[in-house]
Image 1 (tube, one colour):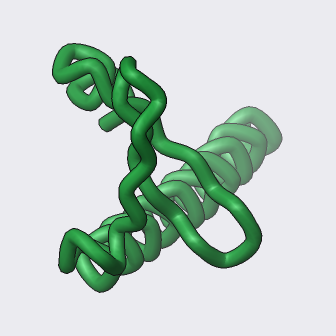
Image 2 (tube, one colour):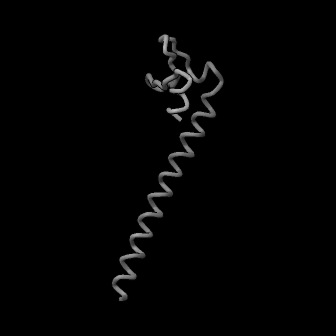
Image 3 (spheres, rainbow, N blue to C red):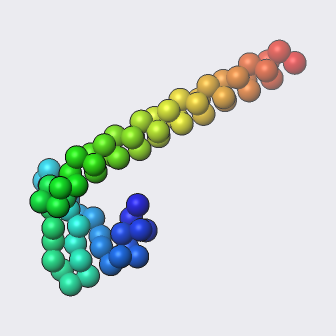
Length: 72
């Protein structure tokens, strides 16, 4: 996501609980002002769930590998 923003000349910033974008000229716009805060929050939640699920899958896969080695 940050690479797509960088291509547009924007960077994400956070100040307290406010998240926004900053232009190359230094102008800052809060996502809530742009009407994007809810979409951003949903995307962050999805990414966190994805990372959590991938961690769980990696753990279970390594456990299975260990169990298979012990059976041999």
